[in-house]
Image (cartoon, rainbow, N blue to C red; front, side):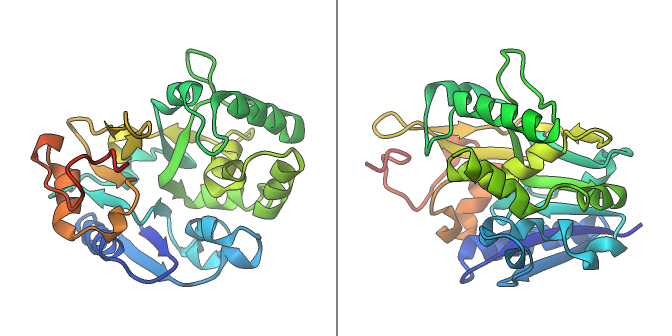
Length: 274
């Protein structure tokens, strides 16, 4: 059984990038997986005109990944909790892919409108998916489109082969542009979220402990920290702006400690930076 954890980064190396790659490589070794980090490599960018946003999805289009039984795509701002030994690849259980939801996002998108991302646009997007590709997208209990996060994705060999038959990245981007959707809806996260719903594709909602996203909620002067770590947190997705420039100690604190114990290199009013 050959499993691979894959990370991608374009640009100069930053402290947070170096720390994520170091820790994810250690985690891969702990669970007996292989590790690959592509730095400033262009693969997806040769076939889609929003390249940097699709490069983390290189396994979907690059046959060099076909030697693996399973591949995990892990964003460069994701960090394993200390001493993590649970094997993420055990989660697939015969499914083609596994991905975590952002459980609070459907609600937030009803009260915030950031960059044109909101619940009404989500609903229009889901309608286009149905009209264009016959996709029956998933909704939550309040009839809001579910939000999936591609910061941590696990894909089986069979799943990768099925993904090669999905519409191309560029075909999807072109349709989203045709209907005038904001740029966010043209990117890989929504591409992947859409096509895991095609008939015959089996995907699993991973426990949210595998992608505990930490983010800023709201804006100045009422911003707060969205801490989505359950007690069994495994991989922590640090989505704070500029965090990739923070030292390893600060990132370790965010990953492993309660908020009250954080000592971050930010002003005392953060996340209200003004």
